[in-house]
Amino acid sequence: YILTVGHYTPVLREGYRVGVPRPGRWRELINTDSAYYGGSGAGNGGGVHSEDVPWDGFAQSIRLTLPALSTTLFKWSAGGEG
Picture 1 (cartoon, rainbow, N blue to C red):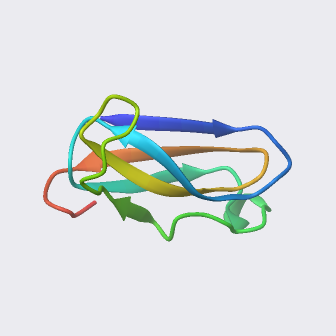
Picture 2 (picture 1 turned 90 degrees about the vertical axis):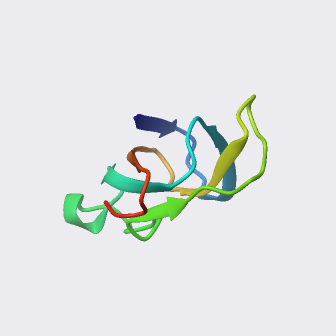
C-alpha cells in the first residue's frame, strides 16, 4: 500500500489523523518539504506506526505532521521495517 497525503495550506499541521487500511509501520518515502529538497525539514521522522483508533472508516489510523504546502508519500510495512 502507498498512502499519498497532499497538504496545500501555508500552515504546518501536527497530529493530523488519517485512517489506514492495515496495521503496521507506514514509512515516509517522500516528503516534498524535506531539507533534501530545500524545504523546512518538518515531517514524520521517517515514518509512523498505526494505532488502534478507528478513523475515516478504517479500524487503524496514523497521526501525521503535515508540512505546509507539501505532498508526503508513505509505504505500509506489516512487520515494522521499511
